[in-house]
Length: 126
Image (cartoon, rainbow, N blue to C red):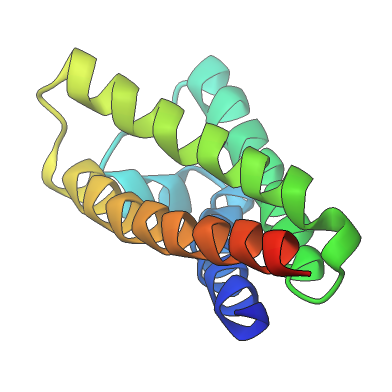
């Protein structure tokens, strides 16, 4: 069970660390999301989003090997992916690159569901 939790957290970590490249500028943001991030306000928001994803990705990666951090990391990962998926679903009309992000987040969410179940089972059985 412990290995499943570690694997799930590492999958979520990698997926959250990939957008960190967006901090490099509007060209990278465009490649990641298929949007024109040349407008300064949008660029600030999206680059800040990249930093926040990097922080959450780092937490998920560290938590993979530190059981005391696993519950907060699982909660953070769920909150991140579930909120993005909910927004993508309610707003709709996402471009092809954002639809790809939706699919990747669905895979990561499934990994976190499995990891959370394994984490809860391991805690229950001692």
